Image 1 (tube, helix red, strand yellow):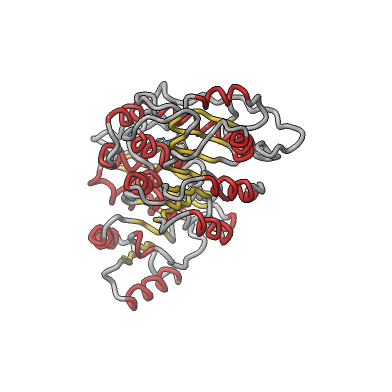
Image 2 (cartoon, protein in one colour; image 1 turned 135 degrees about the horizontal axis):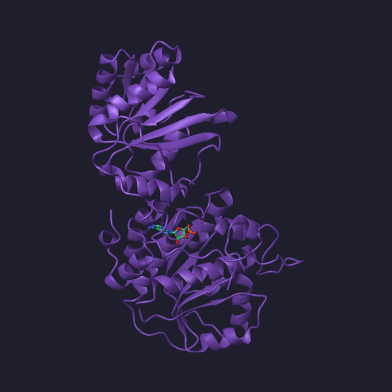
Amino acid sequence: MSFASLGLSDPILKAVADQGYDTPSAIQQKAIPVVLSGQDLMAAAQTGTGKTAGFTLPLLERLSQGGPVASNKVRALVLTPTRELAAQVSESVTLYGKHLPLRSTVVFGGVKINPQMMALRKGVDILVATPGRLMDLYSQNAVKFDQLEVLVLDEADRMLDMGFIRDIKRIMALLPTKRQTLLFSATFSPDIRNLAKGLLKSPIEVSVTPPNAAAPTVTQWIAPVDKNKKAPVLCKLIHEGRWQQVLVFTRTKHGANKLTKQLEAKHITAVAIHGNKSQNARTKALADFKAGEVRVLVATDIAARGLDIDLLPHVVNFDLPHVAEDYVHRIGRTGRAGQVGEAVSLVCADELDQLKGIERLTNQLLERRIMPGFEPVHDLPETHLKAPGHGRKKRPKKPKPKTGHRDGVRSGDLARGHKAPR
Ligand code: AMP
């Protein structure tokens, strides 16, 4: 999947490429088409999933097709709970919109209001704001909403936690009812669903699992290896490590059957579990595996969902999953309850894109260990978390203010990983 196939136009694709992103993240793949279609969206996604680009890119795309904005008016409003997040979102808008003739600005409390009033005077296509300062600006006639087309509520759960519900409701009452509304939240709690009921019209719901869900006790590494050497490498790992119980994932049912035969041929007891097997066969396979009668359970992702096997010491990805989140599900099968676990992925050159997706999602580069005697002929190129030269520099953290501010940082906000504003 590429950004171009999602229906974004050249100026946006160019900005994305400038950032060094080559594949859309899961939330981007799910959210971008919905936003482009003009429907309301409710998205469960945490920071770190790429959610900001998930709404910013299609928002820019939509706004690039409209007419000019009148003075003091805004076409899209992005509400965030904190100044830090507002600054960060605004930075993304500027970055991804740099090849488009759109205007944007950011307003939040704790700084002078006058420059913000000046910035709004000509009108802006995108306004990023925290609720309190936005209300102040509205009450001084510095901002008008009758040209508003899109509303985005970012980190809606935190807005509720921080007590912004009344501000949000007051703002909503000022907006045109004919608009597109996008709501992002880490979870869909009952409170969020309640809020959404009043704000969104027949929203499309999408969600992604949080990244980095693997237990810290799991050692993860990859063995770069040619495709036709994967089975021998797995046998070597099992033999030499004297693994007694290992769960192996393959992408296809056919792959699971084939691997089971290859293992059996090397006198390693194995059984496959996948969608083509009857429920009885699956139950028996699982029981035999748990009883220690078979050493290897070979499973596809679908079959593995809901498998009740705890505390597995070893999980092997014989094939990398196409959907990066499945990697996190798979390796979540080991290292539970504080036990140490090991997750090994056998990665061939064809799987480079999947590897990149996993490393981006989990925000880590996986350690590579070449298996002696199985050095790959087809090289697995080096991977990077960001394209060289495009990484955002880490800014020093801003000291926490002594008291909470209605628009501002409550204790712990910075520690939650938001970047400090410029
Ligand atoms: P967010 O969840 O929006 O805070 O984004 C997390 C980080 O992922 C940010 O530093 C983005 O620059 C980065 N990012 C967003 N989308 C992608 C992508 N498709 N590929 C690589 N990095 C991305």
